[in-house]
Image (cartoon, rainbow, N blue to C red; front, side, top):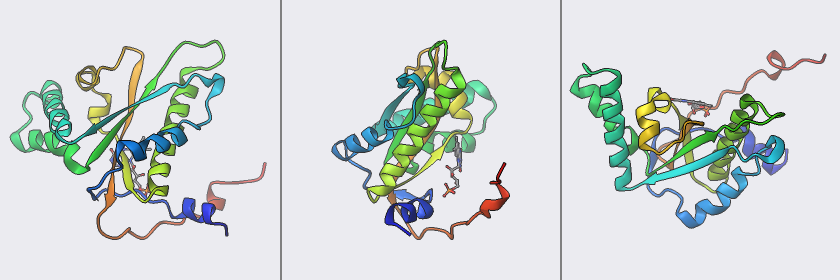
Length: 185
Ligand SMILES: Cc1cc2nc3c(=O)[nH]c(=O)nc-3n(C[C@H](O)[C@H](O)[C@H](O)COP(=O)(O)O)c2cc1C
């Protein structure tokens, strides 16, 4: 098996992430690789926001506020959990789909292209020796959070990529029985 295919077979998300995260300089080619995603009509229906350092604390406050809008009775444990979520990795990349009207490219295709770009970024990070995990949760679909991050009305958060350096061992990787999902037609 060649090295590239082996890399793809070994790719694994990682929830326990420590410093360091990729630097801005290291991220540049990773984003460039991400943007090689297949993209009908080359709409580039994606954009990304990097959140690191103290800005993660700020984002956590926005998560807390959004929780209180969704659920004014949220207890302090739930509030702290929301506020601490961005601290789970040294770098968060907010992946955004920017949906525009196009005669040949419906919104689903634009979301898929943005999703491919997001996965491309995760792959590029792992290929560069870093680790990460794609998360969403209620915050991703919350208008208060979207407004705080400056999303326009035609934009959606498709995920938060938590990136950093793997802490601990990788868990055993499931190897799916491909023939359960693939058939000849
Ligand atoms: C759109 C999307 C949203 C996800 N949201 C979450 C999430 O909120 N929390 C979580 O633990 N995993 C989430 N996942 C799954 C993880 O990113 C990861 O795929 C999963 O833990 C399995 O690990 P693996 O990628 O190594 O197989 C999400 C995946 C996708 C594609």
